[in-house]
Image (cartoon, rainbow, N blue to C red; front, side):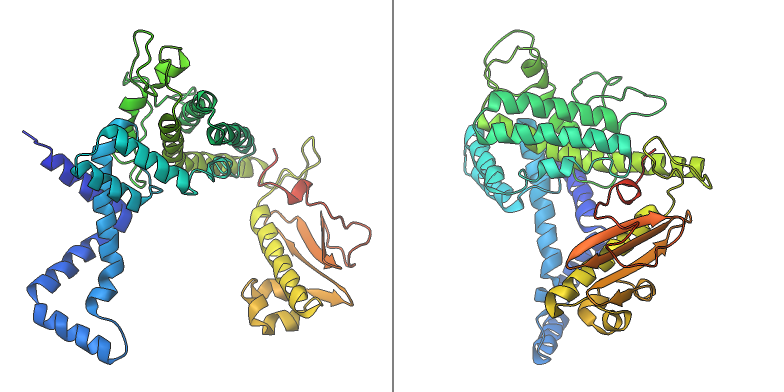
Length: 418
Protein backbone atom coordinates (compact mmCIF):
# COMPACT_ATOMS: atom_id res chain seq x y z
CA UNK A 1 0.00 0.00 0.00
CA UNK A 2 1.25 3.49 -0.84
CA UNK A 3 1.86 5.39 2.41
CA UNK A 4 2.44 8.58 0.46
CA UNK A 5 6.12 7.95 -0.23
CA UNK A 6 5.53 6.59 -3.74
CA UNK A 7 3.19 9.47 -4.54
CA UNK A 8 5.73 12.02 -3.32
CA UNK A 9 8.50 10.33 -5.32
CA UNK A 10 6.44 10.34 -8.51
CA UNK A 11 5.47 13.97 -7.97
CA UNK A 12 9.08 15.03 -7.36
CA UNK A 13 10.31 13.16 -10.44
CA UNK A 14 7.68 14.90 -12.57
CA UNK A 15 8.39 18.36 -11.15
CA UNK A 16 12.15 17.91 -11.58
CA UNK A 17 11.68 16.86 -15.19
CA UNK A 18 9.55 19.93 -15.93
CA UNK A 19 11.78 22.37 -14.08
CA UNK A 20 15.20 21.02 -14.97
CA UNK A 21 14.49 19.21 -18.23
CA UNK A 22 17.50 17.21 -19.37
CA UNK A 23 19.52 18.80 -16.54
CA UNK A 24 17.60 16.71 -14.02
CA UNK A 25 19.86 13.74 -14.68
CA UNK A 26 22.91 16.01 -14.61
CA UNK A 27 22.15 17.04 -11.04
CA UNK A 28 22.10 13.40 -9.93
CA UNK A 29 25.25 12.45 -11.78
CA UNK A 30 27.18 15.52 -10.61
CA UNK A 31 26.13 15.03 -7.02
CA UNK A 32 27.12 11.37 -7.23
CA UNK A 33 30.52 12.36 -8.64
CA UNK A 34 31.14 14.79 -5.78
CA UNK A 35 30.09 12.25 -3.18
CA UNK A 36 32.08 9.40 -4.72
CA UNK A 37 35.20 11.40 -5.67
CA UNK A 38 35.74 14.07 -3.02
CA UNK A 39 39.48 14.21 -3.80
CA UNK A 40 39.01 15.00 -7.49
CA UNK A 41 36.19 17.39 -6.70
CA UNK A 42 38.59 19.29 -4.43
CA UNK A 43 41.30 19.27 -7.09
CA UNK A 44 38.89 20.63 -9.70
CA UNK A 45 37.85 23.33 -7.24
CA UNK A 46 41.44 24.31 -6.46
CA UNK A 47 42.35 24.49 -10.14
CA UNK A 48 39.33 26.65 -10.78
CA UNK A 49 40.25 29.10 -8.00
CA UNK A 50 43.88 29.23 -9.15
CA UNK A 51 42.70 30.13 -12.63
CA UNK A 52 40.66 32.97 -11.23
CA UNK A 53 37.41 31.07 -11.43
CA UNK A 54 35.11 29.54 -8.87
CA UNK A 55 34.84 26.21 -7.11
CA UNK A 56 33.03 23.22 -8.57
CA UNK A 57 30.25 23.67 -6.02
CA UNK A 58 29.86 27.29 -7.12
CA UNK A 59 29.55 26.21 -10.72
CA UNK A 60 26.90 23.67 -9.82
CA UNK A 61 24.95 26.00 -7.52
CA UNK A 62 22.36 27.03 -10.16
CA UNK A 63 21.49 23.38 -10.75
CA UNK A 64 21.37 22.66 -7.05
CA UNK A 65 19.12 25.71 -6.54
CA UNK A 66 16.72 24.39 -9.16
CA UNK A 67 16.80 21.04 -7.40
CA UNK A 68 15.89 22.69 -4.09
CA UNK A 69 13.10 24.60 -5.81
CA UNK A 70 11.77 21.37 -7.30
CA UNK A 71 11.64 19.82 -3.84
CA UNK A 72 9.87 22.89 -2.42
CA UNK A 73 7.31 22.99 -5.23
CA UNK A 74 6.60 19.28 -4.83
CA UNK A 75 6.15 19.51 -1.07
CA UNK A 76 3.95 22.59 -1.44
CA UNK A 77 1.87 20.91 -4.12
CA UNK A 78 1.20 17.88 -1.95
CA UNK A 79 0.57 20.02 1.14
CA UNK A 80 -1.43 22.99 -0.11
CA UNK A 81 -3.47 22.06 -3.20
CA UNK A 82 -6.05 20.47 -0.92
CA UNK A 83 -6.45 23.92 0.64
CA UNK A 84 -7.16 25.59 -2.71
CA UNK A 85 -3.65 26.81 -3.58
CA UNK A 86 -3.02 26.01 -7.25
CA UNK A 87 0.52 25.30 -8.41
CA UNK A 88 2.17 26.80 -11.48
CA UNK A 89 5.64 27.89 -12.51
CA UNK A 90 4.88 31.34 -11.07
CA UNK A 91 4.72 30.34 -7.40
CA UNK A 92 6.90 32.50 -5.10
CA UNK A 93 9.16 29.61 -4.08
CA UNK A 94 10.78 31.28 -1.06
CA UNK A 95 7.36 32.11 0.40
CA UNK A 96 6.19 28.54 -0.09
CA UNK A 97 9.37 27.28 1.53
CA UNK A 98 8.60 29.50 4.52
CA UNK A 99 5.01 28.23 4.62
CA UNK A 100 6.27 24.64 4.66
CA UNK A 101 8.53 25.54 7.59
CA UNK A 102 5.51 27.05 9.40
CA UNK A 103 3.61 23.82 8.76
CA UNK A 104 6.45 21.76 10.22
CA UNK A 105 6.46 24.02 13.30
CA UNK A 106 2.79 23.36 13.95
CA UNK A 107 1.15 26.40 12.38
CA UNK A 108 -2.57 26.09 11.69
CA UNK A 109 -3.97 25.93 8.16
CA UNK A 110 -5.53 29.37 8.66
CA UNK A 111 -2.15 30.83 9.65
CA UNK A 112 -0.55 29.31 6.56
CA UNK A 113 -3.38 30.72 4.41
CA UNK A 114 -2.66 34.17 5.80
CA UNK A 115 1.07 33.83 5.06
CA UNK A 116 0.52 32.66 1.47
CA UNK A 117 -2.16 35.28 0.89
CA UNK A 118 0.25 37.99 2.01
CA UNK A 119 3.06 36.60 -0.13
CA UNK A 120 0.96 36.51 -3.29
CA UNK A 121 -0.42 40.01 -2.76
CA UNK A 122 3.02 41.47 -2.08
CA UNK A 123 4.42 40.00 -5.29
CA UNK A 124 3.68 41.43 -8.74
CA UNK A 125 2.60 38.09 -10.17
CA UNK A 126 -1.14 38.65 -9.90
CA UNK A 127 -0.99 42.29 -10.99
CA UNK A 128 0.03 41.18 -14.48
CA UNK A 129 -2.83 38.70 -14.90
CA UNK A 130 -5.05 40.96 -17.05
CA UNK A 131 -2.14 41.42 -19.48
CA UNK A 132 -1.47 37.69 -19.55
CA UNK A 133 -5.13 36.89 -20.20
CA UNK A 134 -5.08 39.24 -23.20
CA UNK A 135 -2.43 36.98 -24.78
CA UNK A 136 -4.64 33.89 -24.88
CA UNK A 137 -5.16 32.76 -28.45
CA UNK A 138 -3.03 35.59 -29.83
CA UNK A 139 -2.78 35.38 -33.60
CA UNK A 140 -6.42 34.52 -34.23
CA UNK A 141 -8.97 37.31 -34.47
CA UNK A 142 -11.88 35.53 -32.81
CA UNK A 143 -9.81 34.08 -29.97
CA UNK A 144 -7.98 37.37 -29.59
CA UNK A 145 -11.21 39.35 -29.33
CA UNK A 146 -12.46 37.00 -26.63
CA UNK A 147 -9.18 37.36 -24.74
CA UNK A 148 -9.46 41.15 -24.80
CA UNK A 149 -12.88 41.00 -23.18
CA UNK A 150 -11.71 38.44 -20.62
CA UNK A 151 -8.78 40.68 -19.82
CA UNK A 152 -11.15 43.59 -19.23
CA UNK A 153 -13.22 41.58 -16.76
CA UNK A 154 -10.15 40.22 -14.97
CA UNK A 155 -8.87 43.78 -14.66
CA UNK A 156 -12.14 44.81 -13.06
CA UNK A 157 -11.95 41.81 -10.74
CA UNK A 158 -8.41 42.75 -9.71
CA UNK A 159 -9.62 46.26 -8.93
CA UNK A 160 -12.36 44.80 -6.74
CA UNK A 161 -9.78 42.63 -4.99
CA UNK A 162 -7.51 45.59 -4.26
CA UNK A 163 -10.50 47.50 -2.89
CA UNK A 164 -11.48 44.60 -0.62
CA UNK A 165 -14.66 43.85 -2.61
CA UNK A 166 -14.07 40.11 -2.59
CA UNK A 167 -17.77 39.35 -3.02
CA UNK A 168 -17.35 40.84 -6.52
CA UNK A 169 -13.85 39.67 -7.48
CA UNK A 170 -14.35 35.97 -6.77
CA UNK A 171 -17.43 35.32 -8.99
CA UNK A 172 -15.80 37.15 -11.93
CA UNK A 173 -12.58 35.16 -11.63
CA UNK A 174 -14.28 31.79 -11.23
CA UNK A 175 -16.45 32.54 -14.27
CA UNK A 176 -13.36 33.34 -16.35
CA UNK A 177 -11.60 30.18 -15.18
CA UNK A 178 -14.64 28.24 -16.35
CA UNK A 179 -14.82 30.05 -19.68
CA UNK A 180 -11.11 29.68 -20.43
CA UNK A 181 -11.26 25.97 -19.65
CA UNK A 182 -14.22 25.53 -21.97
CA UNK A 183 -12.46 27.42 -24.77
CA UNK A 184 -9.21 25.49 -24.35
CA UNK A 185 -10.97 22.11 -24.51
CA UNK A 186 -13.24 22.92 -27.44
CA UNK A 187 -12.72 20.49 -30.32
CA UNK A 188 -14.72 19.16 -33.24
CA UNK A 189 -15.67 16.17 -31.11
CA UNK A 190 -16.43 18.39 -28.10
CA UNK A 191 -17.75 21.67 -29.58
CA UNK A 192 -18.85 23.09 -26.22
CA UNK A 193 -15.68 22.20 -24.37
CA UNK A 194 -15.50 20.99 -20.77
CA UNK A 195 -15.22 22.58 -17.35
CA UNK A 196 -12.66 22.21 -14.61
CA UNK A 197 -15.44 22.62 -12.04
CA UNK A 198 -16.99 19.18 -12.23
CA UNK A 199 -16.64 15.95 -10.33
CA UNK A 200 -18.18 13.96 -13.20
CA UNK A 201 -15.53 12.40 -15.47
CA UNK A 202 -17.72 12.87 -18.56
CA UNK A 203 -17.91 16.63 -17.95
CA UNK A 204 -14.45 17.19 -16.54
CA UNK A 205 -11.87 19.09 -18.54
CA UNK A 206 -8.58 17.27 -18.89
CA UNK A 207 -6.26 19.90 -17.43
CA UNK A 208 -3.11 17.81 -17.58
CA UNK A 209 -0.24 18.23 -19.99
CA UNK A 210 3.32 17.03 -20.37
CA UNK A 211 5.10 20.36 -20.10
CA UNK A 212 3.79 22.83 -17.50
CA UNK A 213 3.79 22.71 -13.72
CA UNK A 214 0.13 23.67 -13.74
CA UNK A 215 -0.68 20.63 -15.87
CA UNK A 216 1.10 18.17 -13.65
CA UNK A 217 -0.97 15.28 -12.30
CA UNK A 218 -0.79 16.68 -8.77
CA UNK A 219 -1.44 20.29 -9.80
CA UNK A 220 -4.70 21.45 -11.41
CA UNK A 221 -6.35 18.01 -11.21
CA UNK A 222 -5.72 18.05 -7.45
CA UNK A 223 -6.79 21.62 -6.70
CA UNK A 224 -10.01 21.16 -8.66
CA UNK A 225 -11.40 19.16 -5.74
CA UNK A 226 -11.28 22.24 -3.52
CA UNK A 227 -12.99 24.49 -6.04
CA UNK A 228 -15.47 21.84 -7.23
CA UNK A 229 -16.80 20.72 -3.86
CA UNK A 230 -20.56 20.42 -3.84
CA UNK A 231 -22.44 22.48 -1.26
CA UNK A 232 -25.75 20.71 -0.71
CA UNK A 233 -27.22 23.19 1.79
CA UNK A 234 -26.88 26.91 2.23
CA UNK A 235 -24.23 27.65 4.82
CA UNK A 236 -21.40 30.01 5.77
CA UNK A 237 -18.36 27.72 5.86
CA UNK A 238 -16.00 30.29 4.37
CA UNK A 239 -14.94 28.11 1.43
CA UNK A 240 -14.60 29.13 -2.20
CA UNK A 241 -16.36 26.27 -3.95
CA UNK A 242 -17.48 27.38 -7.40
CA UNK A 243 -20.79 25.57 -6.92
CA UNK A 244 -21.35 27.16 -3.54
CA UNK A 245 -20.49 30.67 -4.75
CA UNK A 246 -22.35 30.72 -8.06
CA UNK A 247 -25.48 28.99 -6.74
CA UNK A 248 -25.76 31.02 -3.57
CA UNK A 249 -25.04 28.11 -1.25
CA UNK A 250 -21.83 29.42 0.32
CA UNK A 251 -22.58 32.71 2.03
CA UNK A 252 -19.20 33.62 3.49
CA UNK A 253 -16.89 33.07 0.57
CA UNK A 254 -15.85 36.73 0.39
CA UNK A 255 -12.45 36.71 2.11
CA UNK A 256 -9.07 38.00 1.00
CA UNK A 257 -7.62 34.49 1.15
CA UNK A 258 -10.38 33.05 -1.05
CA UNK A 259 -10.08 35.87 -3.56
CA UNK A 260 -6.31 35.36 -3.71
CA UNK A 261 -6.74 31.62 -4.17
CA UNK A 262 -9.11 32.30 -7.07
CA UNK A 263 -6.58 34.55 -8.82
CA UNK A 264 -3.81 31.99 -8.20
CA UNK A 265 -6.05 29.36 -9.80
CA UNK A 266 -6.61 31.66 -12.78
CA UNK A 267 -2.85 32.10 -13.15
CA UNK A 268 -2.38 28.32 -13.21
CA UNK A 269 -5.24 27.95 -15.71
CA UNK A 270 -3.58 30.60 -17.88
CA UNK A 271 -0.30 28.64 -17.88
CA UNK A 272 -2.09 25.45 -18.93
CA UNK A 273 -4.58 27.02 -21.38
CA UNK A 274 -2.07 29.28 -23.10
CA UNK A 275 -0.49 26.28 -24.80
CA UNK A 276 -3.85 24.86 -25.83
CA UNK A 277 -5.21 28.13 -27.23
CA UNK A 278 -1.92 28.97 -28.95
CA UNK A 279 -2.17 25.65 -30.78
CA UNK A 280 -5.78 26.43 -31.73
CA UNK A 281 -4.78 29.88 -33.00
CA UNK A 282 -1.93 28.47 -35.08
CA UNK A 283 -4.20 25.81 -36.56
CA UNK A 284 -6.87 28.36 -37.46
CA UNK A 285 -4.33 30.77 -38.91
CA UNK A 286 -2.74 28.07 -41.08
CA UNK A 287 -6.15 26.91 -42.28
CA UNK A 288 -6.97 30.46 -43.34
CA UNK A 289 -3.60 30.89 -45.00
CA UNK A 290 -4.24 27.69 -46.96
CA UNK A 291 -7.73 28.82 -47.90
CA UNK A 292 -6.63 32.21 -49.20
CA UNK A 293 -3.23 31.42 -50.70
CA UNK A 294 -2.93 33.27 -53.99
CA UNK A 295 -6.18 35.19 -53.52
CA UNK A 296 -6.01 38.72 -54.94
CA UNK A 297 -8.87 40.10 -52.91
CA UNK A 298 -9.88 41.81 -49.71
CA UNK A 299 -12.44 41.27 -46.98
CA UNK A 300 -15.31 43.58 -46.02
CA UNK A 301 -12.84 45.84 -44.20
CA UNK A 302 -10.60 46.23 -47.22
CA UNK A 303 -7.81 44.06 -45.76
CA UNK A 304 -5.95 41.50 -47.83
CA UNK A 305 -7.15 37.90 -47.76
CA UNK A 306 -3.78 36.37 -48.59
CA UNK A 307 -1.73 37.41 -45.56
CA UNK A 308 1.14 34.93 -45.75
CA UNK A 309 4.27 36.35 -44.19
CA UNK A 310 2.59 39.55 -43.01
CA UNK A 311 3.61 39.02 -39.37
CA UNK A 312 7.29 38.42 -40.09
CA UNK A 313 7.47 41.27 -42.61
CA UNK A 314 5.88 43.79 -40.25
CA UNK A 315 8.02 42.64 -37.33
CA UNK A 316 11.26 43.13 -39.26
CA UNK A 317 10.22 46.60 -40.38
CA UNK A 318 9.07 47.63 -36.91
CA UNK A 319 12.38 46.46 -35.48
CA UNK A 320 14.20 48.56 -38.06
CA UNK A 321 12.09 51.54 -37.00
CA UNK A 322 13.19 50.97 -33.40
CA UNK A 323 16.81 50.96 -34.53
CA UNK A 324 16.33 54.22 -36.42
CA UNK A 325 14.59 55.79 -33.46
CA UNK A 326 17.42 54.78 -31.12
CA UNK A 327 20.01 56.04 -33.62
CA UNK A 328 18.24 59.40 -33.89
CA UNK A 329 17.95 59.71 -30.10
CA UNK A 330 21.72 59.27 -29.79
CA UNK A 331 22.98 61.22 -32.80
CA UNK A 332 20.07 63.53 -33.70
CA UNK A 333 19.78 62.11 -37.22
CA UNK A 334 18.58 58.96 -38.95
CA UNK A 335 21.10 56.35 -40.04
CA UNK A 336 21.97 55.51 -43.62
CA UNK A 337 22.43 51.87 -44.58
CA UNK A 338 26.20 52.24 -44.09
CA UNK A 339 25.76 53.93 -40.71
CA UNK A 340 23.37 51.27 -39.46
CA UNK A 341 25.58 48.43 -40.68
CA UNK A 342 28.65 49.87 -38.94
CA UNK A 343 26.94 50.95 -35.72
CA UNK A 344 26.91 48.01 -33.25
CA UNK A 345 24.00 49.40 -31.24
CA UNK A 346 21.79 49.67 -34.33
CA UNK A 347 22.93 46.55 -36.16
CA UNK A 348 22.07 44.44 -33.12
CA UNK A 349 18.40 45.32 -33.71
CA UNK A 350 18.13 44.52 -37.42
CA UNK A 351 19.22 42.02 -40.05
CA UNK A 352 21.71 43.03 -42.73
CA UNK A 353 19.40 42.13 -45.63
CA UNK A 354 16.79 44.56 -44.40
CA UNK A 355 19.29 47.34 -43.69
CA UNK A 356 20.28 47.15 -47.36
CA UNK A 357 16.79 48.46 -48.23
CA UNK A 358 17.17 51.62 -46.14
CA UNK A 359 17.28 54.97 -47.94
CA UNK A 360 17.70 58.34 -46.27
CA UNK A 361 17.39 62.03 -47.05
CA UNK A 362 17.94 65.03 -44.80
CA UNK A 363 15.70 64.40 -41.80
CA UNK A 364 13.86 61.34 -43.18
CA UNK A 365 14.27 57.64 -43.92
CA UNK A 366 12.30 54.77 -45.42
CA UNK A 367 12.52 51.03 -46.14
CA UNK A 368 10.27 48.39 -47.60
CA UNK A 369 9.85 44.60 -47.81
CA UNK A 370 7.61 42.27 -49.76
CA UNK A 371 5.76 39.56 -47.84
CA UNK A 372 5.48 35.90 -48.82
CA UNK A 373 2.07 36.73 -50.30
CA UNK A 374 3.69 39.35 -52.56
CA UNK A 375 2.15 42.33 -50.76
CA UNK A 376 4.64 45.12 -50.05
CA UNK A 377 5.01 46.96 -46.75
CA UNK A 378 6.90 50.17 -46.16
CA UNK A 379 7.95 52.07 -43.07
CA UNK A 380 9.76 55.35 -42.59
CA UNK A 381 10.19 58.35 -40.39
CA UNK A 382 10.51 62.12 -40.24
CA UNK A 383 11.07 64.30 -37.19
CA UNK A 384 10.64 61.35 -34.85
CA UNK A 385 7.26 60.33 -36.30
CA UNK A 386 6.88 56.84 -37.80
CA UNK A 387 4.92 56.49 -41.06
CA UNK A 388 3.51 53.43 -42.88
CA UNK A 389 2.26 52.29 -46.27
CA UNK A 390 1.34 49.00 -47.92
CA UNK A 391 0.34 48.08 -51.44
CA UNK A 392 1.07 46.18 -54.65
CA UNK A 393 4.15 48.23 -55.44
CA UNK A 394 6.70 50.08 -53.30
CA UNK A 395 6.48 53.84 -52.79
CA UNK A 396 9.67 55.66 -53.76
CA UNK A 397 9.06 58.81 -51.73
CA UNK A 398 9.85 59.80 -48.15
CA UNK A 399 7.16 60.52 -45.60
CA UNK A 400 5.07 62.52 -45.40
CA UNK A 401 3.77 62.18 -48.97
CA UNK A 402 0.93 60.58 -50.88
CA UNK A 403 0.40 56.98 -49.77
CA UNK A 404 2.12 57.42 -46.41
CA UNK A 405 0.10 57.47 -43.19
CA UNK A 406 0.80 57.68 -39.46
CA UNK A 407 -1.75 54.95 -38.63
CA UNK A 408 -0.68 51.30 -38.53
CA UNK A 409 -4.25 50.05 -38.96
CA UNK A 410 -5.50 47.76 -41.72
CA UNK A 411 -2.95 45.35 -43.17
CA UNK A 412 -0.37 46.68 -40.71
CA UNK A 413 -2.40 45.53 -37.71
CA UNK A 414 -3.13 42.14 -36.18
CA UNK A 415 -2.08 38.78 -37.51
CA UNK A 416 -5.16 37.89 -39.53
CA UNK A 417 -8.39 39.69 -40.40
CA UNK A 418 -10.67 37.27 -42.15
